[in-house]
Amino acid sequence: MNFDFNIIGNISQIEIIIINKSIRDVERLRKTYEQGRWRKLKGIAIIELADNTICEFEYPHFLKLRKRLKLS
Image (tube, rainbow, N blue to C red; front, side, top):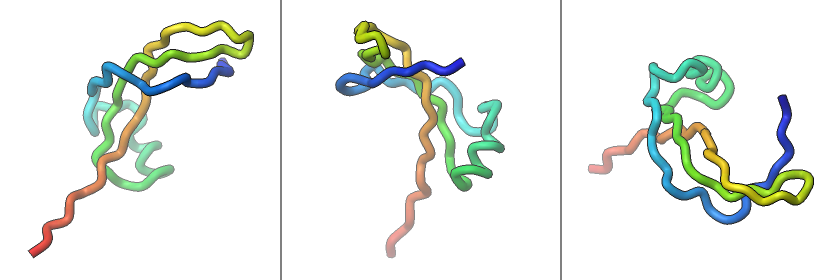
């Protein structure tokens, strides 16, 4: 299923749903985008559909956190 839409503005009310090993596709993410501390997030976005309809949408997405370096 393919949806054609544009996100208008910022994504708000972002919250963490799942962390690292609990993500079903974590191995695919690691192979495609490198190792990292993966989070599955969701947030609310205002989107514009292909037919110019504007609506609110719960937007799920992934985020990879980088490791922090210790500086001495």
